[in-house]
Length: 89
Image 1 (cartoon, rainbow, N blue to C red):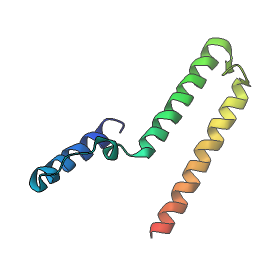
Image 2: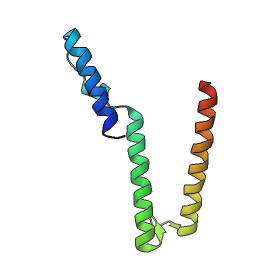
Image 3: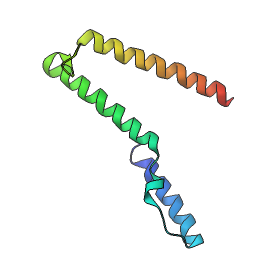
Image 4: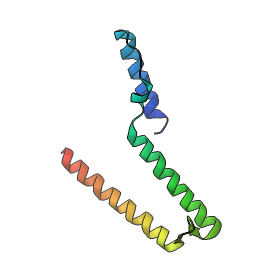
């Protein structure tokens, strides 16, 4: 997702700009939510790696607390996705 979305945005923007003869703005091609997705992936990876290495996520949360936090975020994401789908419908 991190590579495909900006690539597709670049591809379609390039096709449109070639027809209109406009310069391309690369900053507008990178959606902000991709940065959030990348940040959350990094946080989860570091947390899981630190649990495996030292037994505490980020040196703060024990294994069970980390698992509970991850489960809470997962359940919240599912509920918010359902709410978003209901809003679209």
